[in-house]
Image (tube, rainbow, N blue to C red):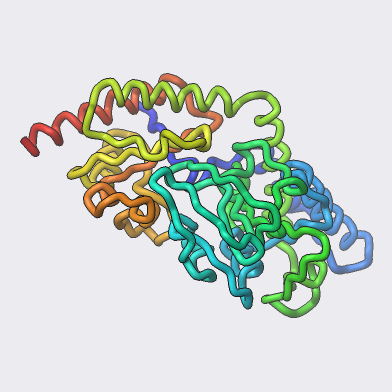
Length: 347
């Protein structure tokens, strides 16, 4: 039986549009900083992709600074600033900020001083969506971009982090989106590429794929694809909820990403569930895919007030555009069979 991929929040499968754009970009032999025809042709690929990403994110092209990913973008945005965040932020953000903003039991973060704060648009593990205050210094939009209708020009933040591989683009390319007039000191110095904010010859293949993926993702949003995905997510949770009373559906009382379910079954280790479901043909995760394969108690759930037992028993199921109703029903059946065996052993 074919495997079912339900880990889109970790990385989404490469879109055919992105693959085609990358293959086409391989023929660009010039350096985009060169002024001859070949260089200008390479530069045109970058600027087309910049316009595609900006349009999909509701920003202006000049606001988009291409980076190697959201992790680099986080460093570029946060280095040298005295910023505050919450423990529910991704590790790429937590590495740069003081994590002292309070988090309530529903996963919502309270921001007292927006100009000195970082706040994610949506959480990668629980899917919980935050309300961004006006004047926010930085937002991590990595999970929201492509899944929610987002307009950077209206979101209230000065800077935003986004990544290609979360929307079906290639790995190793992302962007920092910067509101006009915001100072961003370069961390990688050299030739002055990316408007002097990120030096180094541009990753043309990755950038081309990012642009094509962003355009396709915007089209999916307009076509209602994520509404269908949300229906499938709700069907999944309904089936599970009707058959077990031990599992906690984390963040269900809050607004969430349309594709994300975070399930905590105290006493049943998340890493065990991931391995069991992998053997059954399903790819899921036990939290954010940011720790080089390490599985640990979820810092997100701990920040929300869950005890160690619940926080270490969480799994994340994240659907994508190619997920079918049959996929989620197959997963529900397989997971419930494993959950029944776990209860029998624990009895």
